[in-house]
Length: 482
Image 1 (cartoon, rainbow, N blue to C red):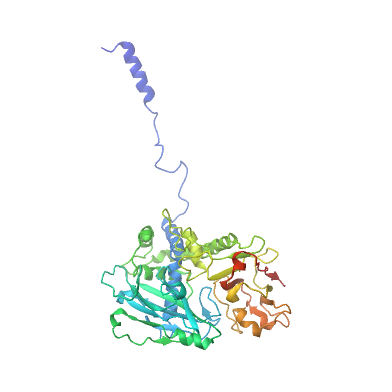
Image 2: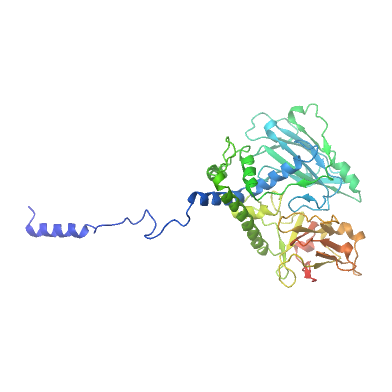
């Protein structure tokens, strides 16, 4: 039987253990006195989803725009090959192309079944280099000396996702993760051969459905070099329409399921019409525009982080992921910001960046005084006589706002080793190139017009030699003229 003392002690303990009233939980709500930061949360969500979707889809949207622009040219269609007889014009709109080697490009849609791409063997006059990429711009096949055919030519067979039929012998079988594929090749003239030789060689490519392999039809080639080409991404509501067009066709990969759930809230859902909330259209477009400016800032940081020579201002612009590729998918994360930064200003990355890549791209982040290059200014670059490039070097100027050529009356986006007979050379064999709104007196042949755009320069080295990789060669900085 409990004593009076024990009862009193028990009652006191129970009293002390009982909390005072009112008592709030330790969690479950924001701190007292706080309130939501915006009046319309749905509009805020629309803005944020559009912002993140633009970053997430950057590589896919860029190549989708390339496909749409390519197929919009006269005579083009899937399984038709565009083979230009000369380099691009400055009115051709694309992300950081070159204006030295002519392009060969084509697209296909594997929803109609497997497709064969027959690549010719290297000849004494020409060889093909290039890549076939999927809907996310991931390289599914290299061709030529760096590809499965090793420069000996062969038949590449591209089969769609989930394809289970038996594949025939005699093909390099490529199992694609997407239905729509696109390729861009370059036909490189060899041994003193002419551009006409390289062009003729490019037209020995063949492309046709596997279903017609027993009696392949003649491949149709078109040369639309004289026509406009519009392949740049949009940064308005059309960006979301492009994302919709991609995800309604291509299989959803596990890495993308979270984003697919978020896209549904802004009207992007496979199997349903594209229907973004009209009342939040302004917020959606704000998110897309802000994503564009955010990627510009990401790239400024990216270039500054990858200087090739510590005492120069040249950035090595191809910055791969931890696996030396450009997917930016690790065991633990999809690195959306890094992937967006990499693909914002570049297309057709190699599948893997080797220690000694076959092509090098360098961009100055500043002039010799450490100041960023500005619109309206004139700059000079002295290119040494001995450049460490087996095949060729070139300097190309782009508009920093678009990463595309600046259309100009000279139709000149760059100059390089192939233009030596047209340029004014220095007595020691070096050459001074000028970039600006006006040509310095007497330097018209050495001038790349900026049309008052902010210049973004690329120095290309095709076949970089040991002096580059050992860094015994150093490129002079760009100098401000006025």
